[in-house]
Amino acid sequence: MATDDPKLEVDLDPSGGLLVHLRGVWVKDQVIPDIRDITNAFQKNHDVQRLSFDSEEIARWDSVLLTFLVKLCRVCNEKGIECDTRGLPDGVLKLIHLAFAVAEAKQIPHESRNRTALYRIGERLLANRANAQKQLYFLGETCLSLSRFFTGRARYRSSDIWLFIEECGPRALPIVTLISVLVGLILAFVGSVQLTMFGAQIYIANLVGLGMAREMGALMTAVIMAGRTGAAFAAQLGSMKVNEEIDALKTMGISPVDFLVLPRIIALVLMMPLLCLYADFMGILGGMLVGVGLLDLSLTEYYTQTEAALAMRDFNVGLFKSAVYGILVAIAGCMRGMDSGRSSAAVGEAATNAVVTGIIWIIVSDAILTVIYNAFGV
Image (cartoon, rainbow, N blue to C red; front, top):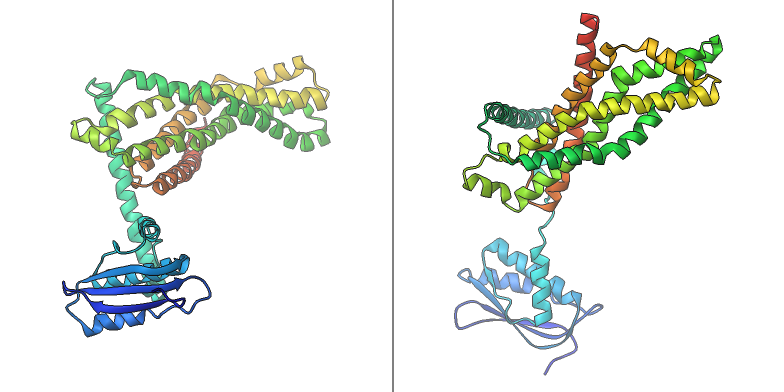
């Protein structure tokens, strides 16, 4: 007969293992037996290799029993003892399987707390070196793929290029329009504060036109595409890696870089200059709204001043930058996607890293190109 208080008894079963008899009511507010009663039995019987359960006399149970059993199963795993849960109630059995199906969070090793600052610096440097090696390897694979593309030996689907062109180009127009117009408005507002003091409102057209054509049009478009398209590339390739589609391509003798990365790079490089040119005109339009609406400039004056201030060289500067940004954003997104882990959390992390890496490369390349332009007087 089952008793009200939870009880357990440990016996040796005929096979030489331990048999745990569970009895009574295993619910909250009951005095639960100590798990050491079972671990002490392990110490007395060193040759025990198996633990089984008898739960026929359990009257009622809740999460208290489940918690007790999960702790006991973990102790068995640590000691290398097989834990046979077939004798437990069906509900408990399903919950235990569910508890162990979820991967445990990684614990920080205790020894890491005592690591010196020099050790941490060295560990970080080694991690950065490994990351740099991966980036250089992927960059080399991409260059080889591009060489195969120009020599007609790359294996890819031309339809994929048109698909990614649509994704990178026309579908990005709404967000590029919004951001570019707002950037033009901001440049005009910031410039008007100072220029109005000298009665030089007409030069708002020069400020907005040159700012958008040479710098802000390409830069803001690149940042938008890093957050929109670069992250999408990383998520797509990361999901393919989780589903083992990339491994399947390798098994069939098809280079994943040719088949997956190359079309994305080509599409983004082709679309970035066009999006940059579109952003330039939208930004100039935003500045025109401020100049005409708030500074009492006529459309003719603003247009004439903008035309006089801008030369084709100014647009070429921004267009070249945008092409470079397109290459960097595409490589960052594809690299993080191909380097992704094989879990859903890893795919999200890859998308985040793609955005961060893309923006960092954009800012660094912008600084380098600006210095080069200044040195050559462009």
